[in-house]
Image (cartoon, rainbow, N blue to C red; front, side, top):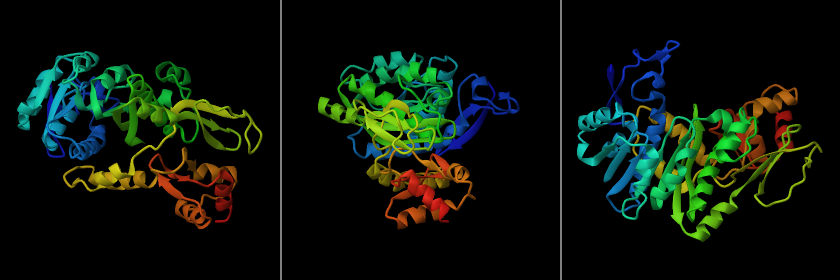
Length: 389
């Protein structure tokens, strides 16, 4: 296998040589003998920061499990860059195991890692007994995470973190709705804010799986960037906590005609006609209707040292935007689209936000879309703001 040496954070990694495994002239991770995606460095940096915050709340040692390890980039970084962490890694690819061990040795963390050539669900199932469970489990598959959720929930400790990634954004965003229904038991919507509904559907699948085992779910950080969705959830044992999490599950109503949207509870009746224009509404879900991130957790992440990360500037800007939109309502509005529907020139997004705030509404940018806002204002007030600029 042809290898290159790269550095993420303070961790050195031998990875497949990008020039040797290409598709249409670009490095293709799926072509390499062992999986490694350099585009996920931002995700790994954020994960290291999230784990650092979490570790400060737990008694050491901390057990982390990465059952889909590839060459071990994520698990080795956890062991190398976070104090008091032991990483358990697994991969079904026999070629991955010696490379994981080599990378562990390269960073002097061989004593802090365990490596298994095993199916991810089997590795997690073997950790489901009391005394063998993990504080932090990271499910980062190629495609959907739903195949691993049941095993992961049973293998996580009380008040532990389950981090989940989904890269099957086409079904979740409504391009392939039948696939979304099959995998997530949820109906998606193909709208301008489809990446948010996709994220909420993915989180909802975690919440519903946790409920089966009497766990309540708290979302600490979640986001949609690049080609994937990501969520860090804390699972706390207790039927009442589960009931509270279930209360944040629901449906999202959307009017394709005028853009009106509203969330409703799982058991709520609803009028199939839009209250604004009278046209028929669409319904997405079930999905998570609660907060997408926890402000206090984000504040702690912002206080973590990220100076040695290659993505430090991006992380700073990203976390501050996510922090601002924490308590905002579900969905967002793309100003370009609204301006086009009104046959107006697109105004500066900051002026739209200022106008809405002047009328007493909350409004902020959103990480989901560079030309969109989240706001407490009804769509009629947003349109008025655009007309007035």
